Amino acid sequence: MTPNLLRQLWFLVENTQAPVILGRDDASLVEWLLDQLARQRSLEGYETEVISDYIRSKTSLIRDLAAQR
Image (cartoon, rainbow, N blue to C red; front, side):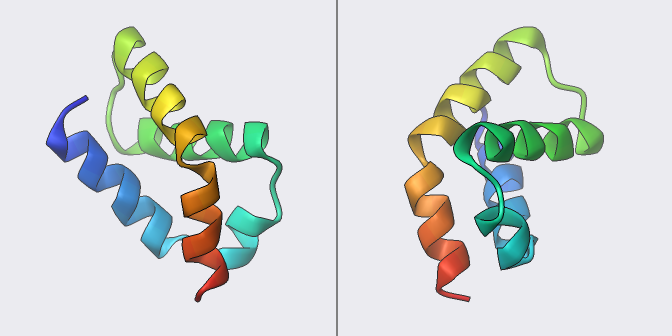
């Protein structure tokens, strides 16, 4: 995973309204974030798998950040 892709993901998380994040279960949150990233840039197959695993491992952090807003 490239640093640029990580920056894009966290920029997306920070700029997404909290109810959008908090209103989804883990699986749909991962899918929604992947879809949003794919709209911004073309993701290779391996990138999709890696970023998906990364998002799944960070769902608690993503929700905590959203809840603090």
